[in-house]
Length: 253
Image (cartoon, rainbow, N blue to C red):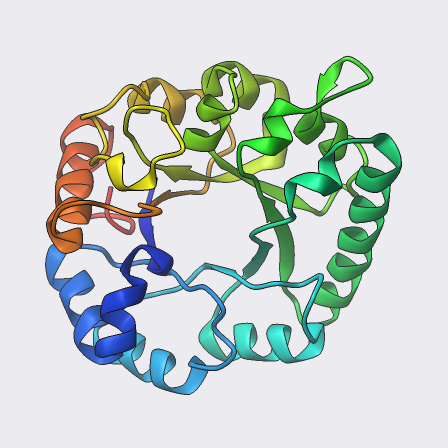
């Protein structure tokens, strides 16, 4: 399975030097990245990815609050095959009616994405797990409302912060999960306390094994107290050393 890195992790470095940051990502050993809010930087980012031989199979963009045609056009330019809605605030996950409305809007976005040959997905935080709707987590209730072509990118750290075992959640969500965010730490909302994969409380290897239809594992830090490039390098080294596959094949696993 290939490993990618969510570029939000490197947002401060990207703001200072986008080409140089992408070059460092490639030097560390990643061959895939997951861009965020990529419409504004599509041309510069695309050039940097091509120069360093990096692919961007997935990307985050606010599909439910910005121009979808603009997003899908930029995604196509960058070679992004799956565009993921990254954030719906906690107050939208407290009752069935609001969740149904969000699912309907995302289903509509997926139909538009299909016109561009692009798949649509959703990425969770902890509140989708903290809320219970009709005996299920809000995330699971939501998944049951999505059209078959939509996928989930499960942020396994926020699942655990939300009070659930990510291994169990991944098993219950099944084939809908095509991507996961891989991060580690003390399972608190203190993002600066996050740690490289294998150094915190998340059973990272068990989590990866539980995602049976996984296409891409995406390394991410919401924040980090140390050197962020060292952090992602440690995560990738842990993953390459402990998961099956030849690092010379596929993307980075």
